[in-house]
Image (cartoon, rainbow, N blue to C red; front, side):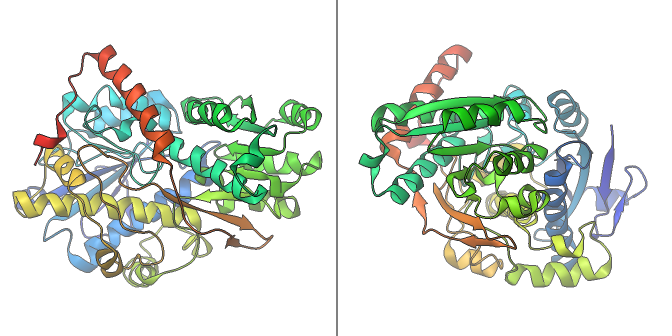
Length: 441
């Protein structure tokens, strides 16, 4: 198992065990683990996310001295996107630091499913920003899961909203054929339930086309698409699967402007390898896109220019780098929220869980943090662990991503009944008594 540890003062990456702190310092550290994949088929996407996440944490240490005077101890563990390795990383890291791990970001729906069974006993929250179990939006059942900013059911709904808008209204969906080309894993299967409901509601034919991991070979799937001639293809891929899909679409002359990827299929590594074949391809945004904003100035000043970043210069400001930064910011602000109640000291996972449920990132606070223009307000609660259901669409013009839509909001007339139904079945299966959120404070 490979680890990478960042020193508490935000220094360059060092191997675990090579950085030591005094006893007093160690007792005032907040441990945040990082489950990453810098190797393997998913590394092209995993690396920029991991770099953005680490750089933001290092910036907070270097600029602010940590969170309210509490230094952050950050350590990576390489999962290779494999569920068993992710669980092993979790077990190794969950007890580190004076109060244990503040939270885990699995960066894998498969790992999230596995850790969902472990987190309640260990009292450690799971930050699954834009991924994970869609039913875990229901915080009354999934106390420890936080799919902040968007679930895959929200993504599926927004995708259909955008297609309907392109075609002139939801009534124009009737009789159309929409295909889902998906990574054959828990991640890729997550949107299916929502898409099945919408296909019945709006009258479109729904095709399901799985792609075995890692997804680099898709010739048979694109032969099926060429023969079936769907009116739109939704891409639910990750890593090499995304660029392979865009390239194969070009090979069979399927219009790239009739392809719409989920927000994990809409970053630079997904289009650059496909070259000119990627032009016109569209993807959802987890609100943010590429580009540099106010926060990047401090990251570049305190981290990148000091040689403390693993990111390539051209990577800073790309989609997944920015997402990694947002992920760390949201986790740190949850810790800060918890400190406001429990004191400026290292927080336990249980206290950080309270912080996530009481997080209130207003527009003013987002501006103070330097993220204005990257995301809108976020306010989860006991009942709603997603916090917001906003998304946009951007399109690759051959050189960069261009935002081509206004914000869409997930339709709760479709989403909420599905959440309640599936979360309720999970609660019954696991013998969980849902919390009464009206009594939570």
